[in-house]
Length: 112
Image 1 (cartoon, rainbow, N blue to C red):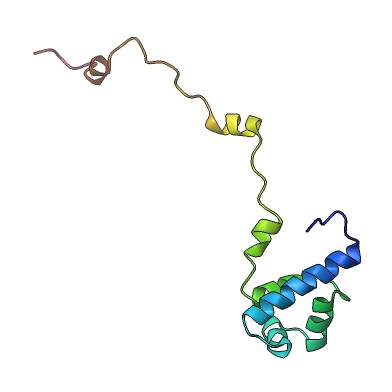
Image 2 (cartoon, one colour):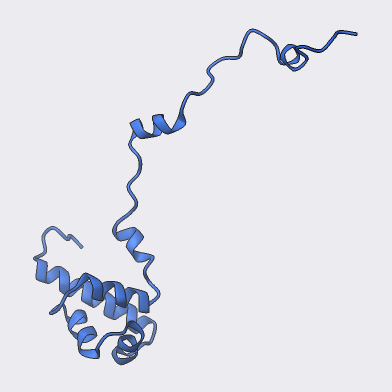
């Protein structure tokens, strides 16, 4: 589906239809979903028809459907920029020192 070609109302109807399909896939009635979500059944019905929309209602419905993880797809965590990654890495060694590991390990110990 191309979201950009749709009107705001059409997008609301599509979101409502997808919520309705999710609810039916889980074999939950609108009344039961409303009870679990702490909403009125008419609120769930209006949301599914796309005639009423609230972000809070969406969150409550997704929580009741045990589908809050869908928000990760919807709004993914932004990745750090390459500059931020470079700063996080800090200084990394690029070459070994002139002394060997055995020399520095035994520094200050007498040779017997």
